[in-house]
View 1 (tube, rainbow, N blue to C red):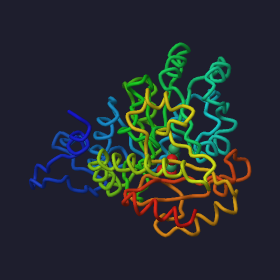
View 2 (cartoon, rainbow, N blue to C red):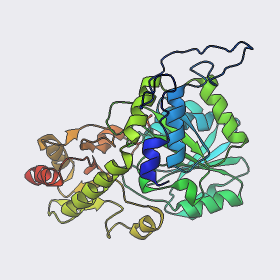
View 3 (cartoon, rainbow, N blue to C red):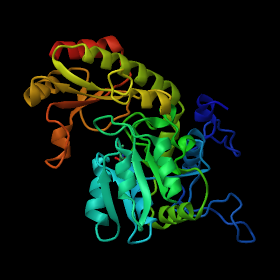
Length: 370
Ligand SMILES: *Cc1c(COP(=O)(O)O)cnc(C)c1O
């Protein structure tokens, strides 16, 4: 089946007792045993597994073309489960512009347990050079935040395979509609479902999807059920509901982002636009090769510096000045202020999560302040 059909049907189970067409929310933490002590429905206790979580995991595994998925309470706990599943002393290679929440997690929580190097993934030889005897995993994120840099998934998968390393891709910015890392050779895909998957800025969640069930994946499942950073049934229900419209929402995000990027690129107040769908993007050819569509995120630099950037975000009427991304409403953010002094993000950069409002209204709002 095609992805639009999978998004609607593979996370839903018609209720056998009532015939409810939409799977009900199962709040019960515990499930009745059969006479012989087993569990006829397959459920025991909600930290270990829950019908709504199962539905969510099923639909996301289907969308990413994976064997199985594990859902978590946030994107960061999904990422943390990967790091926790590694043996102490393992070395990880990460991009130098890794999502700052996960970069800080490694630096603040895993220092002394794991070792890691942050290198520039647009120069794949740097990945190659960073590999040492203890290296167990390569972590990638593409497009990256907030400079929309890409890395070549197929090429890195090749390097990982040659050195028997686990290759994980954070696919949050692209969504499975715009990019399918498992089909390009990745072993595991990670998402913050807080973003496009849920799509309505009202749930936090995360997920991992594996291409195949193996020893490492079994370890991740142990982290999920014994670590217990699992999403509530209601949150799973909301994300499963959001996913039904994901393919159509992404088309709108992509079309609006492309139009907005072209408008900004032509505007005299703008120095540079970062969007993989622009011909001027230094990796536009790679974007065409590995992405199915160019996503809904863009960043731009203002000619008149940080002052002008602040003036723009404060003058907008439709765009909300807020962090996060992937919701139906457009958000804009001065990333430098969020990421702190050790960031490489330029001070005159604004990051936009392009929403689903009418493109004419979005352009008019920006035009008025630029
Ligand atoms: C938001 C985000 C995360 C973390 O997800 P949370 O749900 O906020 O914990 C990880 N990676 C990327 C690319 C993100 O945008």
